[in-house]
Length: 325
Image (cartoon, rainbow, N blue to C red):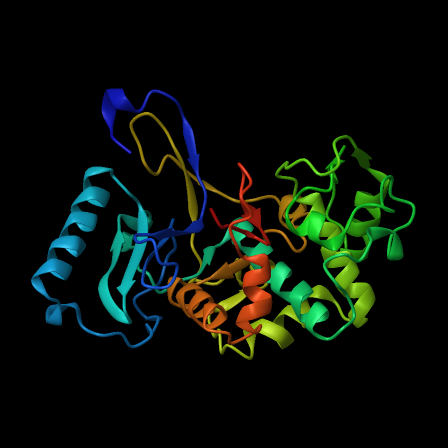
């Protein structure tokens, strides 16, 4: 993002993590970018995961790392980056301030809100239930929520692909419990265009409700039991649990002339409303560990995983929390 005259409109920069793939293969080369921002007092140094030193890079790897680094600096990027190719770390670096007030620099080893990447985790929990024989992709929504219009034809797969045709008509105006959020969603939805893709988080709120019904466990308990603990994700937690940690990212509002115009606090209502859809925080290292483990069959057998995470030929190839086109 350039400064000065190129930054005409006020923008808001929220903590996030993004995965970019650099090759045709889904497994060979990946960039995990985290941004933005946290504070880590010098007295509370955060220990990074061990990685291979970038000093051992080949000339081609050095050129690639340098090109990415220069691109981010030129773009005035604020946040962190972690680049790995064939299990070799090419670049791991922080850009800009994690906290302007204390002049703390960014680092790839702190918590960032991962936003909608959490939907991939919710999808994996659904796959776990399919693996256990409690669901199929063709199970109808009516088995769990018969009061929803169209539920007799809407399938689990429709919801995973965001092709249910369901849309939320309102959002909560106060913090709610998980069960209250699901009940609110059930009373504030409509069916418009079945089997047509629309990005609608409501699908994953309802999938979360189904998980709770099937397992008789809170979503947070289930996610920790099935994903966080088995993968040893030591720097992954629900935002509410770590939002006040000195190791959690801070978001800033950006003005036309100032990257750090105002520190932002996300309303509790908004965070609570992201049940199963976007209220997890992770370090860049944990996000890398998560996808590496999942893609190697560490949580779900590959055959089942890629029956969901595949290019479905759709113009909008959204498949179980990831874009697979």
